[in-house]
Every structure is written in structure tokens, then in C-alpha cells.
Image (cartoon, rainbow, N blue to C red):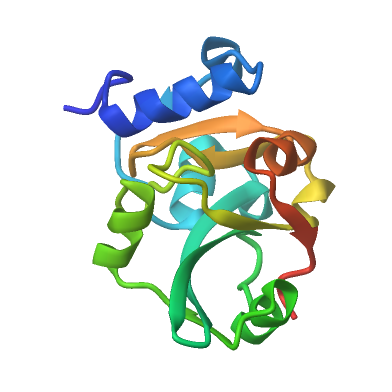
Length: 166
């Protein structure tokens, strides 16, 4: 049984508090089922799929070094890896496997929160999310989400706002 006491959800709540946002007021929600896709999250919440901030972790390669890159993208479209690479100055950006995602975020694919990771992760936030008054993001577990705004998402993550669809 998942609860708000889940370690990853607690880390997100602590990060929200540190940023001056109240987790209770921001309404971290536990859903009945896992919502590992934007479509599933949108259906569970009764919102447009574009208002879902997909948390996609990529492997960004800089020469011999590989670093995590978090792209918070609108559920209405896909992130373009060549565009992401150009935005962050990487030689290449590619898909991360579940072990890489967990290593760098402490969370499982399908529930990666924008913050609350063991170490800060470079983040790009899809400018298309600005179209929505409320944006829903994962809260650290595949059954948890929280509402925020595009501006708060950029500020909370220290992310770069950009067109990520290419």
C-alpha cells in the first residue's frame, strides 16, 4: 500500500517545503492505480493530456562522461533527443534504463518527481506546459501526482524553459 509516507513522496514534499510551497496546499494525490503514462494520468485526473508533465530521464553524453538529464515534457508530444542535446550542449542524448533512472533520481520510471533526488539533476522544462493553468507532475511514485504551475515547475527545478519537441 502506497501512502504519503512513502520515502520518495516524502522527499518531494520536503523539496516543496524548502521551495516555500506547501505539500498539503499543493495537494499531493495518491491515485488508485499506477499512472506510468501521460494518458493514464490525464484519464485518472480528468484533465487534458497536455497538462501532464512527463518526467523523462535521459543519458546525456559529454565526451566520455554520462550525466542524467531530466526533461519535463507536455504529455501532448514527445521530446526530441537531438533538440535536447543541442539545448544542453551534449554530444548525444539517449534513453536511460530503469537502473540509471533509479541511481540518479532514487525513483522508479513512471513516478519520477521533478525534485527530491539524491543530487540535483539538470532539467529542461517544456515551454508547451505554459499553456496550462495547472500542470500535474509525478510525486515520486507511480501512484502519486501533484498540481503545480509551469512557472513554479521551472523555479522548483532550476530548469531551463525550452521547446523540447524539436
